[in-house]
Length: 370
Image 1 (cartoon, helix red, strand yellow):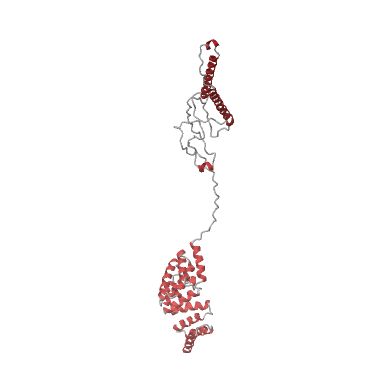
Image 2: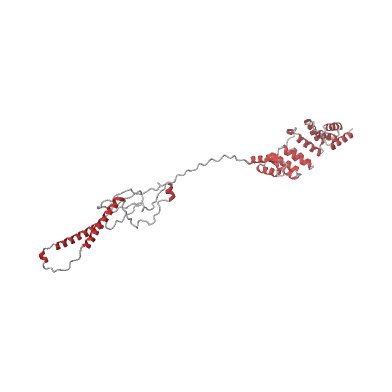
C-alpha cells in the first residue's frame, strides 16, 4: 500500500509540473506573439483538469479508507503462511470425544510454521498463541531480523499430545450377599424330609435313591428305602441293598435285624444266624427285636434249647407280649416239658391279642397236653 501511495503522489507531481510549464508559456511577452498568426483556439483543458482532480480525490479516498479501516477494526495482520508447510485439511488436535471430555487436555508445544514475506513489504515476525489477543496494532516498518516462524490457531498441525485420562466415576459395586452354600448332606436332609412326609408317594423310591447319591451314609434314607423295597415285594433287590448297607455299617443293629428277617422269610436260618452273630449277644441282651429274631432262628434250626433260653429272656423283658409266651410254649413242648408248655400257652391266651387261628391252635395243644 505504501508503494501504491508513492506512485499516486508522483503522478500528481507530474501533472502539476505540466500545468506550470503551460502557464509559463501562456504568460510570455507580447513581442513574441506579434509574429504568430491567428489560428484556431486550442481545445479546452477542462476535461483534463477534471480527470486529474478525480484521480487525486480517488487516491485520497483510498488512503483515508485504509487508515479508517485500520483504526476501526484494529485486527491483527493477515499472515500468509507457506502453503508447503500447511495442510489444506488440518486434522483436529485431538479426538472430539477427548476435547469435549477434557477441553484443557491438549498441552505441549505447538508446531511453528515459517512465514513467507510479501513481495514489496517488510513484516515483523509475530508469534500468536492459540488464543489471539483481542486487538493488536501494526508495527511501523523497520529493519527486522529474518522472519521467524509464526504460530496461528488456524495453521496448527496435529501435534502428539498426551491427553489426561478422563476422570471416571467408578461405580460402587455392592458387596454380594453372603449366600450360604448348601452342602450335599444338607440337600439330602431336605429331600429326606419331603419323602418322610409323603412316604406313600410313587416318587418316594426315586427320591430316596437321589438322597443316597448325595449322601451314601444317610442312615435314615437307607432304612426307609429298605422298608420301601420290602413292602413292594422286591425281596432280592432288598437283600442286595441291605448287603451294601452292611458293608458301610457292619455293626448297625437295624440293618442286621432286617437282613436276618429276610433270611428267615427265605427259610435260610443259617444266613440269619450268621448275620445276627455279627454283634455280641451280651451287648444286645435287652433288644427285643434282636432276641425275637435270634429265637426264631434257633427254632428254624430246631435248636429248641437255645430257643427256649432266648424266649425265657424275652418274657422277662416284656411279659405282656403274647408272642413271647407262645414261642416259649412251643420250645418247651418240643423239649418234652409239657407242664412248662401248658403254663406258657395259658399266659399267651390271657393276653387276648392273638388271632383266632392261633387261639384255636393253642386250645388244641392244651387239650392234647392234659
